[in-house]
Structure formats: structure tokens, C-alpha cells
Amino acid sequence: MIGIIGGYGNIGIEAADIIKTNSSEMIRVAGRNISKVSQRAKELFASDKWFQIKESSSNEWKDFIKGCRLVLCSAELGNETVECINRIAGELDCPIVYLGINLPKQEAEGKFIYGAGSIPGLSGIIPQYLAQDFDSVASIDFYYGAKGTFTYTAAKDYMDGVFNNSNRSMVMWKYGKLLPYVPAEVEKTNMYICNEIENMRCFPYFDDESEYLCQKYGLSEGRWHMCISGENTLKVLERARYDYQVNKDKTLRNICRASKLDCFGTTGITKFVCSIAGMVSNEVIEKSLLLTSSNPSRLTGSVAAATVLTILEMGMERGSFLLSKSKINLEVMKKLLNIGTEIRVSIRDNIGSDEIEGEI
Image (cartoon, rainbow, N blue to C red):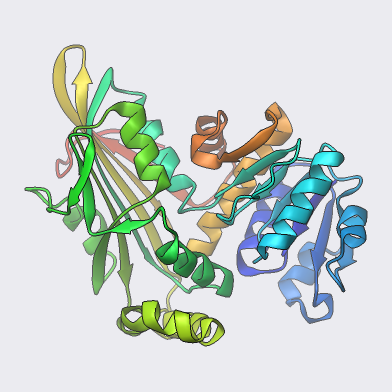
């Protein structure tokens, strides 16, 4: 039995669909408004178990988690709820996979993976996946570009990330410290992102994943970029930092509404581009990885599902881990590429060249 909190939301339903396709596990779905679920959710979970959460009490969560092999949380949760679920799951020896970034302050004797989505999550795994081809890594240039609708939870995660003390903007890593951002001599987004995502704007950032990768590989240079498109979305985001402090709910709903307007009549697109320069057999080389998917919610749900399936097969050690820092991160990437999702990955010897080393 796999428990899914928020299983009928945009991301949760995508994850559930993939889990059901790639395993024989029954699903137990938890939510507050089960009577208002979509027709797709009703059909997908027709033979599964529904669990109505009324008061979000310890007893309710214990009843929900008890009997589950693993619980996936794809819903927006407050810090107190995360603490409660983590404690109960630890007592019941049930791993938790959480898409959010608010790590429980009081660590239970359990198994807790957080940041198990696209960014953070896949954003920290892709550079490590590509770095396997190198003897040593000198620099990383990373881009995440998307055109798709924000869910309420995704918008909240984005805004919480903006105000997270560990997140910094307009900076880059160079020779062991953060410096004001300077674009690379050759911008690497033109071929891979700008061609297919119109009206895109890049926002340099630096977060826990970025710092982890800089330290892990001893980088001399590192640049990270979040690329957002859509005229309406960009206008809302320009004021969002101020508006969010005045009225959080209204700001999140405005982000969601603007992104829906920008994506009206389209399916959306998501791209990750990672370029690494380093040494291979005493030769300086550069490789780039391009990962393309359609709907951003589908991709995020796919990463969550791949994490769930990997843990079911391999297990995980006790403790709380950011997915990209965990011991299973590369196994999750392998699983992601082999579970029938609409994801294309290509690796090229030199960014901008036509030569393709391999495509998955």
C-alpha cells in the first residue's frame, strides 16, 4: 500500500498514474475535499482507498500512515503537519517522500526524503548524472526553463524559495566564494531553451543544491539560472516579492491565474540544460545534457514517482535528506528514464555542436 497525500492535485495525480503503471501497489489517497475531485482522479483511483482528512490530527495521520509501505506527500503542508507526519512515520518505520522544502526541525528516527520534485530535486541530480563522465569537474552552467501553469502548491514553493535564507539571487560561484553574477562568454540557452520558450527571462540564483555541488566537485566556476516565460506571469512575478508579504493567498492565486492565461491552448514545455567542463583522461572537454519534457506538472510528478519506486526497490537509510544529496539520487535518475514517461535526454560533446553522443 502506497499512501499519497494530495493525490488528486495536478502533480499528485501524475505521480500516482506512473506509480500505478509501474507497480502492483494499491494506493491510499488522503485529502480534505474528496467529494470535489476531478473525473480523471475518480477513474484513476476507482479501485483504490480514499481517506478523508477532517481535522489533520495526530490520530488521523496515524490511521492513514499505518499499513503503508511508503507515503508520498505532494500537497502543501504546514510545518506542524510535516513534523507530525515525520514523527508518526518514524514510529511506524514508513519512509516519507515529500516534494516540499521545509525540513522537519525535530528529526524523528525515520526515513524522510524532501525536495523530491523538479527544482529542487532533478535540478541537483542532473549535474551529478552528467559528471559521472568526468575524472574531475571545473565548471557547471545550469539552466531550468519552463512554460506551464503554476499550481497553488508550486507557486507557494517558488515564493517560499524566494524568501528562503539559503537562496541567493544574482550571484555566481567562483574560486570558492560567491561573487556578483557575470554571464558566461557564450550564453548556452540560445539553442536549447530560447528556440522553444518564447518571452523567456533568466534569473540567476544560488541555493542549497548549488552550494552542495560546488563543494562536492571543488568547482572553480558555477552558474545557475531559472528561466521563466509568459508575459502575464512575468508581470506578476515582478511584484510578487512585495505582494507576497502583504497577502500570500492573493499573490499565489495571481501567479496561478497569470500562468494559465499564458499557457492557454498549449501543453507547456520544460527543459533542463547542464553544461560541464572538466578533465577526462588528462584532456579538457565540455559536455552538455539536455532534458526535455512537456507539462511541468507531469515532470515533477514523474520525479516523485521515480523516487517512490526506487525506495520500494532499494530501501533507504534512516535520516532526513534532500533528494539530490541522498545516496539514491542517481538511481532515481535511472528509474526516471525507464518508467515510460515523456522525457527525452541527449548528451552532446560540445554545447552548440550538432554531434550527439547519445540520446536516451
